[in-house]
Length: 386
Image (tube, rainbow, N blue to C red):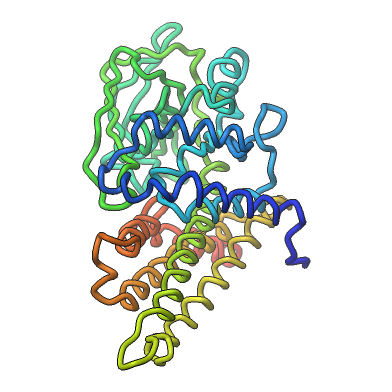
């Protein structure tokens, strides 16, 4: 296997790295303190991302996206993640499931998202359905040419900025292996649709400025023309995107961990105790060695998994392994970074406590560590339990 990046990929990494350093990092502290990104700053980042050719890099070239392979996407995610989600989210990656748009939906939703004219959000999680997505209770009942939605969603990222939501609702039930299962349909629901209410959710300590929202549906009427994909087949449009998303989360974790290591190395070289740099003491130097080793392993696993996705041979378990391992490595590295910095690691005058806070959510969203272990073990045992 060739582990060397192409010249184009190396140039891409350097270009994104420069973009992060010049256009995003200078605003990180003020956004974190304000817990908000101003509309002006959001528009500025979006405009510069479009001008630089980074916007919608995850979307196919035939619809105006970057048309990049998954390995290149993972490399970009690794670099973007070296600044908080509150900022790099505006270098937008529209939901890939919008490729299921058809007819007028392409003009109304897919193309505007790729061109930066509209923003989407993904509305699946509910108060009683987090890890168990099949337990969602939001329902959509057919009424003539419309569906009537009732229910609620929470922890919906970026919904306050979105022009529409990709909403998943139960449209039927069926029996499978003696158990009742939900048939789910996905809908394109415009912001401001009567019966749809969006409000800010509980404040999160991770990624301040990147907010989650609650969405409520009270007899919200949505035309059948807004069904994304096919009725009762919502999981088909969601699953491929969700699985690929775990690999990109892994890449994000690698980037955050590398930033933490870079800060730790500089501090270990500059900070002196007992007359010499603290990095010369084994108590610190061994931590640095372990951090670098763990990050390298997480990076190789993540990029290999992205490469397998390009080959069409990646399994759900492999995506789960990448997300599980990289997110847990990030947690360890962030914690050790605080330890290396000592008291200063917990002060809000520097980025270390921010990295530490932001790292914690990675073991929860896009599938908890426990869910990833379930997916991995189920895949391992499946051939033996037939």
